[in-house]
Length: 254
Image (tube, rainbow, N blue to C red; front, side):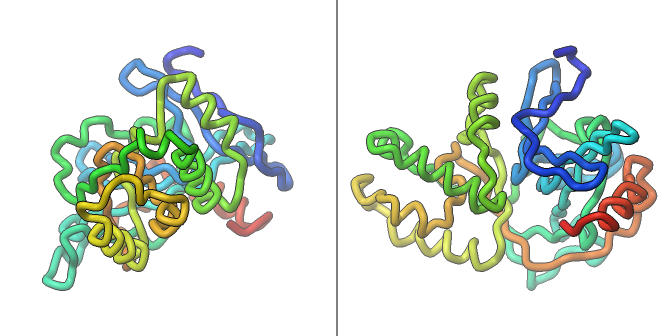
């Protein structure tokens, strides 16, 4: 694979009209291969002047007639980076979603991906579940499988996870997660309940009670979203491909 090339990872997960849908793709970031799959959260900067925000990859497809490789993502911004700004009602771990999903060519999306998130200080720094405890009875694998099925409508990600493992990537590398507000509250509640408890209490029921939320990640930054806003300048971004969104929604809903 050439350093600047893009390729799909895993088998197609759907066909509809001129569209072939996929679960993941591979690209290079700072010379190293990386895979992004549906449901992944990652840091992006839409233009050099924009603040860093979080993208959630929600749809990947290829338009066979034009051979365009496309993506649909949901963007989350810190309250202070929205037109209304941060106020006393906003929580310290809160982000706000852009009301419209953004459709971007993959070649442009990878230019948005931001690898240096050292200055991102927001989010609950949750300690991970001890993976050695999970590994003894297969709970880690069960948790990852549950998380993927929850985020992605039951799609089989076995082939994608294998490709990530072959590259040396792991679900433990997840740096940021955005939850719904109810999920976030349940997560905080469960963390309090298991404080100072031995790892022997970590059962499958416990993992599912956390909603399968990447609790095996190494110190992930946990945020939540409960509101949306209209981004004033995103529509002016030359990378946005609204014309493909119109064609897609005329063939199928997503």
